[in-house]
Image 1 (cartoon, one colour):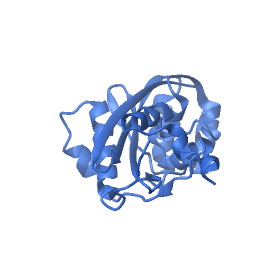
Image 2 (tube, helix red, strand yellow):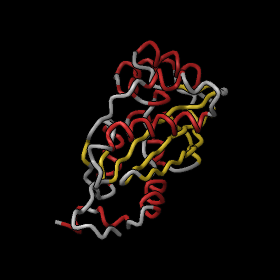
Image 3 (cartoon, one colour):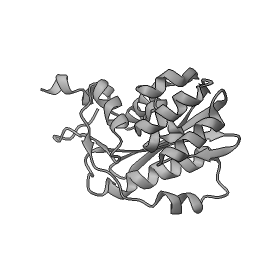
Image 4 (cartoon, one colour):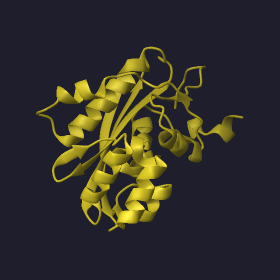
Length: 207
């Protein structure tokens, strides 16, 4: 637990509604401070790295990009990608790419990797979480309809677990919050590593 008179906040280096929603549902109101990093360039420089190392490096770049502005707080960077057939898949960004992606992954098993980086006063904690995903054999009509909603365009793996995409996920093996975008178990371990308790950040305890 911190001994400073300043009660540290959790600062999320992301504009992801899903990541913010995970924290809010867990009793934490994060400060949102999206990091501006060139993910494609960072990934291009990590050609020899493992998938877990790549998502963790991306998460760390995001956290480090804003950490200097929040020296007394807990800064969290995260990045998620789907590993299918040995290849990392990011966000599809378009309707056509979403349809193509879903035809490739429907009825298949893949792994969702989520890299985490937490920084407190210059100290860094990194960890990647891996969760197995069994995609449903979604119909062609449902794939088209889902892609047309726009919901999965900015989602790693072209799906959501907590919204419409939940219809098309048969099974997950691992941490559900990690699939949504931020693993609460990983964040808990990081907070303990830094000497905090999770409850230090719960809103209702400090109102």
